[in-house]
Image 1 (tube, rainbow, N blue to C red):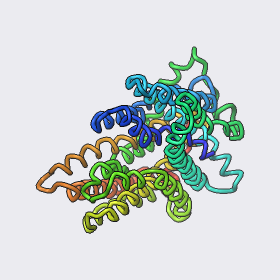
Image 2 (cartoon, rainbow, N blue to C red; image 1 turned 60 degrees about the horizontal axis):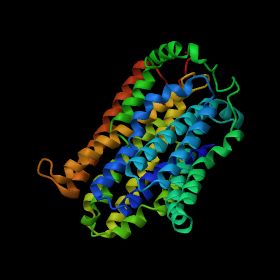
Image 3 (cartoon, rainbow, N blue to C red; image 1 turned 180 degrees about the vertical axis):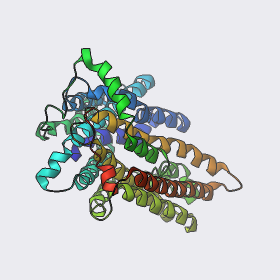
Image 4 (cartoon, rainbow, N blue to C red; image 1 turned 30 degrees about the horizontal axis):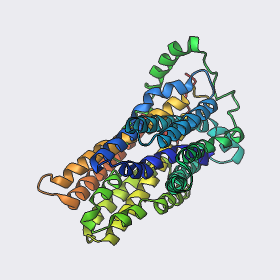
Length: 419
């Protein structure tokens, strides 16, 4: 079930690694490559506006399959017409938007069946959510590593159009497992699917009810704050020269080895979750990662120090996002008619701090209140993230007390009402 999320990782991995190499081969400069890559990744946030469509008319399995196919077609077109920058950029953007929608439809579908899976396994829904969240991230990381490895090989071995077709089919391949994933016992998708005629009136009414749920707003606030973004991972590659690290060294660090290291680390989260519930675990990961970021101030500016910083920041980010996905899955519950909408809304919130913290880290590097360079980045990122974890931890503890909840498990497992 979790590995079926590989479509998202395949397209995201293409944007992070093979796409810049393709653009460079077409003669684009570094600034233009960065702008194109950022535009292609932007659907990670704004695509949440289309999330409610995943809860209309058809099953979420149908939407997950449809968007997996669209994602593969978009990426195949981008590779086949890579010489045309406009077509390449638009096609990759559409492909990534479809991959995000595929992942969100899948998240709503899997979140809806978690209670029955937990009952069959005689386990707690929180534990199942963490296990499933971990494996979805494993699928994403494996997808990123696979596309990084095979894109170059396909382009070297096969003609351009044949390579494009193979890449497109690779992106669609994870959808082949969908027929073996169970459907919710309540019906097609955990709730009656609304027809096009009745959909929008009921949809907006349900959305208003969804946004009245306190736990939804608290989780959104938790993700929007820089408690677990670790945006520093996206900045270190650009300042690798401060560590005297070569481009080849940086490329190897950011390639397949890193992807599979992230996939392996994600599997540690279910072990931790046996002792710590997902919400405090998320904050614990954020706190630990922030302290590690501050500890980087003690390291020398060497290639080995870059390897430590780059690998560790990415590993902690992988753990943090895996915990975030587990929290999102835990809040859905069975019979939620807006399961995919809720999953889309909450996961999109995790993208915001990556965007604004990246800007702030960049400003800190150029100079902020007398501190600049790597030291400025480390201090700004680490201190702000640590303060956010402390504030959000205290705020949620107080909210939990006022709400009269007995444990964080109840907060995470609050049953979704059939709206």
